[in-house]
Length: 549
Ligand SMILES: Nc1ncnc2c1ncn2[C@@H]1O[C@H](COP(=O)(O)OP(=O)(O)OP(=O)(O)O)[C@@H](O)[C@H]1O
Ligand SMILES: [Mg+2]
Image (cartoon, rainbow, N blue to C red; front, side):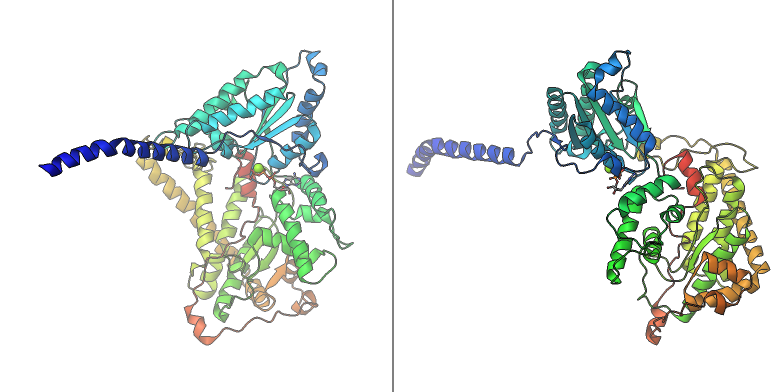
């Protein structure tokens, strides 16, 4: 039994040492955890490094005017308090991505002169529970210390989402952070001279408590710019870039409806890059035009090799869109027809509205639907065969006709009613388990109405093409040869002018000839028409809500 005694005594002797080692290990692990855990850091004031001036924000006159008032208030609050006026505690900037919300906040930073604290809401959301709330507290603490101050929270929806929504309940940490924000907003009184500015492109997902009067009481929409706005934005972005003397920014603004400030900035940059690539010293019309196309549809893919048959099908497909678009009354003028592949599209037809439009009539939507189906109709007419090329057109046409019936109440049979909830419903979980707002029979009728609209549009497109079959064949042949036809050339060709005089200075591009063995392997890909061209439908949808139809 000696070994047992030895073992017992041994354990007794080693036990204190064992605990000591354990303790050291625990302290070490705790220390490592604290190292990894992010600190509660203060928000940065970006006043010093902001190099965006008030004039760099173009075209947002109403938003600027509203914000100007806030800046004036922070500078001389007496002017307002003398009249008993109360400026809003919180201002929410909302609108589509790239319209200049963050830019506007940066401009305020340099203009306000007051202390400016900026933080992106995503920085509050952390793995560690309670840290986001602590950061909010710290941010406001600091702002209070340095009042008058502006606190700017970008991408507010990262913390401000509706509480308790979605499958599986809310995110506890996010809710804690939001609650802290609500508490802080209640905590500063009017005379504390702190103004909170938030920015988001999803105001619809924000918690109602954030939007009530007394919190974000002023909500300013920062929308896509109109023609004048686009012109001003272009002017800001061409500053310091040498342009050809004949460049007309006004017509460029007219040719870019629906583009946001960020897209316009991108367009100018693309044009500048292209000019550099072509070894030019200035930026010309051609580069700007190509910049627009790059923003709308992506860069050209000249190296893609197509078979003769594919080029022919694509040309007829695009001509189908163009002719239907041209001859129907309520469609926008065709701006460009091309069979040069861009992005995923094999070819594209761009039509542009002549002016900004915020409402779209039923007739316009019907004509647009017919134009979308013009490509497929041309394929049927000429080749008595259909291809996968119309997939994207069909997708858009189906979505549009569904919207016409279920959201815009444009079905004569079903009347002015909305069916179901908004398809853009952000919370998957919220509608789950609730009954649809219409019966199964009604669902069937909706399907039938969608079919009827599409069928009607398809037949109208086919009728137009049969009527103008001569032009279809003639201009499609020219398109195959020249690859791109612009608005003016298209109209002149339709008026019967000969190809030689219309496309006199243009030499047909040398297209790469396909290698015979590659021919068969290549399948036609879906073509978009026009890829992302601003359609009146999109304009109407914008007037209703802030995204695409
Ligand atoms: N009104 C404008 N005037 C001049 N430039 C603009 C304007 N709007 C956008 N831009 C350009 O687009 C860029 C991006 O804009 P910004 O970051 O402000 O978009 P945003 O509205 O904050 O978008 P998001 O909602 O995606 O955050 C700016 O840096 C600027 O170059
Ligand atoms: Mg932003």
